[in-house]
Length: 394
Image (cartoon, rainbow, N blue to C red; front, side):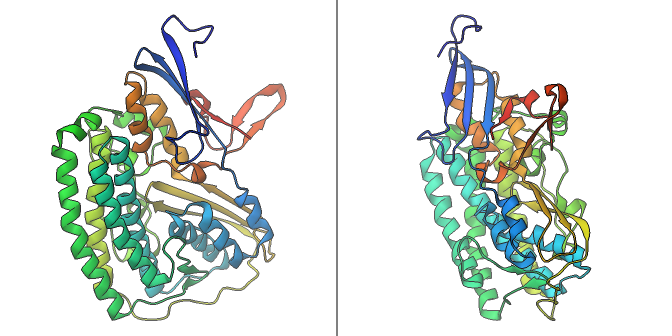
């Protein structure tokens, strides 16, 4: 549709919230001059399920299983962030073996998430062969996680004070065989995304974000590291078993979509190395320590590195058996601005790839609230996102 204030030949193309091309509901308005994007806005908030409020009516143990369902792809890292916060409030620490198993499952989840993203991004670029191959390999990881935990999506590996299952020798050997199978395939995919002309045409110099822009926009995870920002919670502030099993951070300087492919695929090799190291040096000992059902009054903050970037949890206890407040900030929310800022100047056909480039999760990022103060002054709780074209609907 042509807007009244826009110049001739400038149109606004609406996409969503219900649209065949969208896997989750979100509303985008793309202003174009011919085929060239001149501005882009996004309206979020169509998937708010009230999880943060819902956990206030659950006890500390029950809340974990609700928070796991914020995101099916990142369910374990949500449970880990919550468990670390609760253990901080309780004044306990999970045993070393439990911490190592938490990291083991987290890295398997990272492999699953990155392979899933690789397929989605390839599909948006019209490369369905790579989509099918990467999702075939994703099944290998899901079978491993099902063998370890009994579930393929919401693993429920964590409990407050530790983990609920151990890793025996047969399972360790199965994981090693799977990694040996995935590693050469991942190397082949890395060669494809850096040499295949049809894919390079959709990714190289597309959606380029400089180091300075990434810092200004507050980008996190592979989105930031693809622009040379050395930001990884596993390295900057090690938690769980990452203190005993350190991670080598993967960065790139190009800042375009091709760099995002390279960073995520190279991170898979680091995950493979870390998984093997944990299996070879799994600490002995117990799997959990006891956590009392009633926690002392206080506040706790926990930060972990989800596959998409920094995941932030704030917990508050009043001394009861239920959380008084649980606030979650997911990485997708931090990365949305990078899409809308880099979109102008690109073709309309590039928009699906630009959106897929940050590995967005609409269900994850719907946690923002708008506070209207006297004088109709609008204040964003976590970030002033409107200046970057992001609106939030309640």
